[in-house]
Image 1 (cartoon, rainbow, N blue to C red):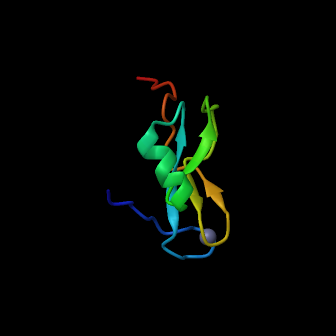
Image 2 (cartoon, rainbow, N blue to C red):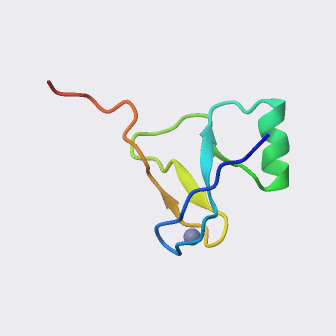
Length: 71
Ligand SMILES: [Zn+2]
């Protein structure tokens, strides 16, 4: 399984990975043990970060999932 890496806005290293919320499956647990994934907890609160940088530990939000779309 390929792990996507994203550029960290804080240190500019391409070491940002998705933070996984909810109950992790066995695949995800293996990724966490390898340091390829980060668990954010069972519930993602509004405004919770989506990604974490493995280089500096910075966390940031990429999208406002679930935000109300006002027409
Ligand atoms: Zn960073």
